[in-house]
Image 1: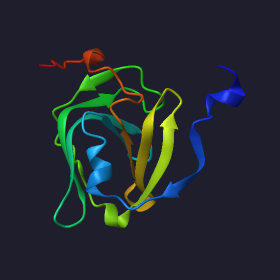
Image 2: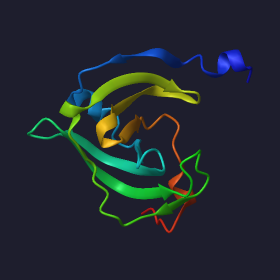
Image 3: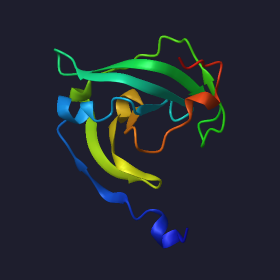
Image 4: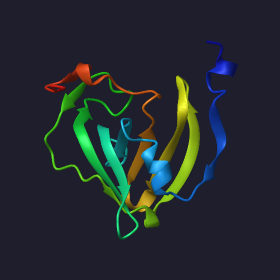
Length: 141
């Protein structure tokens, strides 16, 4: 793909949005990518449900959790049983619509806050996702 067209679907100036249950509902069946520890640790979470909590945060119920072997475009993923926190207090974060991935699909959203050093990227079910069958140690029922 020519370089000038590669990022045609990406938003150059992502818009800040107000997160709502209706927006979260669009990510059920999708995936959540969590980049943390100053960008050195990456996780992917299969989203079973994403709901607004009573306190205004976001609660994710995962189908599965995988850790990437490398934070720089990880090629290998391994199932983890860690107690990875998927409870996001979005009131202290910036939420942005960053548009489609280069593979298309519906828009993605990013929740980020530098002080906590975590970036949460929500991928819709029709967007760029890792194949759960390729996650070592993961059995999909």
